[in-house]
Image 1 (cartoon, helix red, strand yellow):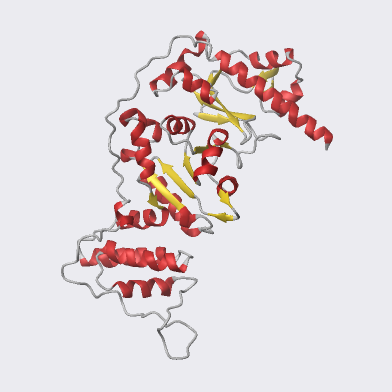
Image 2 (image 1 turned 135 degrees about the vertical axis):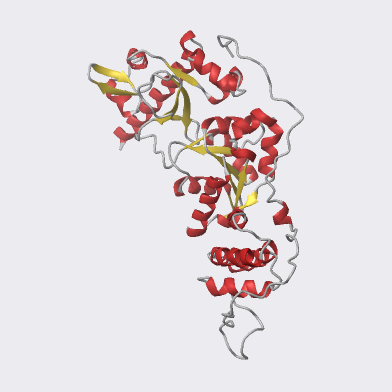
Length: 403
């Protein structure tokens, strides 16, 4: 056990030294394309230092030799995911790429994410990450967690985005609870980490906001949540920027305020799933409204919380323009795996709720009302107002100044 602790401390030290090496390399002439990439996305030198951005030089073993001179053995560098054995000897894992250090919640560098910059890069993947190591487990690490953890715990809210520059954009815009998974989809271990941060007196009352690049990604995540355990789905929200822009692009186009507004206009996850399905049907015709109910009633029936399920059944009736709200609620209950009890209904003395009617959903009113306006439906608007404050046009100097 003592040997494992010693190994871990050595790997952490090697990663910290590598992060310093890469940060210095970002100031080199060779790293001009990396600086240009960041500048184009409105990130200046101060932002790069804040998030620890770096550059992997083109040398075959530049980092490896640098760290060996500091006393690290090749086997330690290999175990840390910094070096690997090539055909002609030890070599660096990353070459000619823009790098972000990935830190633990305690702020320790445990790995790196690397973005492709050059067309002749033999590694075709746009992004690559440190391989699985003693320190780096992609299923349980999140970029930005070290910067966001305090505000996540304080505000009981976490914003999950999809990339390194999205996290940078969010934090610089004042959304300091943003994090991103690294090289894998957001999963149960990521969720567990955020829940631990948002726990208060053993009662979870936080919000999880997923920010997606487009409706398709948001809809897929919402449907997945409906099929899952739904441990946090009732407190989960979706925010989708207009025109499928990611947060970094939205900040470039409309300024910092647009990102804050995007998060403020979040839509409950269940509502997003249902409204997305409704958007694919024609609610102006009787046939379209019946088709919408046939598609969405089973979706609402998947909601496991009986009270929340009944409320969404009522919302569904309003969104579709269905006159008989009780009929929709009954039909949803008949689809549900955990039917809700209905006090005061059914035969006297019966402990079971009345069985929902099995008649077809065909009682349409001739002229259905417009969409019912409720706080939930108003939150569903996705048009993000544009900020009057333009993005900064500061350019980076060819070389960084020392902070």
